[in-house]
Length: 248
Image 1 (cartoon, rainbow, N blue to C red):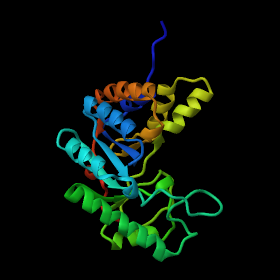
Image 2 (image 1 turned 135 degrees about the vertical axis):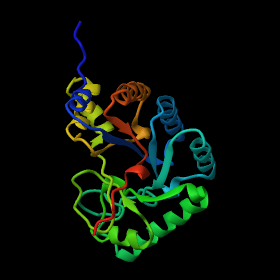
Image 3 (image 1 turned 45 degrees about the vertical axis):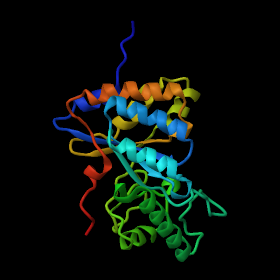
Image 4 (image 1 turned 180 degrees about the vertical axis):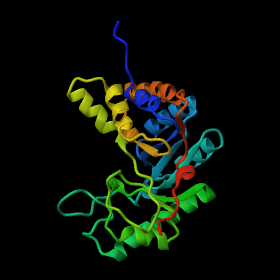
């Protein structure tokens, strides 16, 4: 029988210190049933998870369910744009891109923050994840002036000095699709994506999109989280515990 080799565990074996991991799930407000299924998985594994919440899509009912969940599982809640709407007429999709006036972007960020404050109260954490993980260059400065304390995009996003940044490094859904297309083992591909970024003392982010994840993906996620959490060098933490010091 062929023995399964997990690239992430091998990478962790090679280190002499811990690596900090976090899980960020995008688009809370869409497909509440799939979101609940994902949260059941992370609760069962004891894994902290942070939700990027779409303010315009957040219903009062979902808000109450998320607040109840926070009382019994490690769950962070932060802002994911305003309505997850693409406003660019050409090029890559973006809700807060250069194709909109700065005042319009600021208005949407502010009304999104108000909605989350109203629905979630003190449980709303002032982090910002822009839809599609991109935004215009002046947005981080706007966010800082509005009281946000961290920004989360993809690793490799343009450098900025306004806010501490917690980037995600591996997109679960993309890795899954590519593995299926190449007829490869999805768990190996996903683990390899994370393994490329581990180094002692670093933070590594795993991005999920619950609305696109079928039951077999959630089952695999649970298996992997249990496996990875058992390694002595793996530290799975909420995003608020990993915010780096503000840039100078």
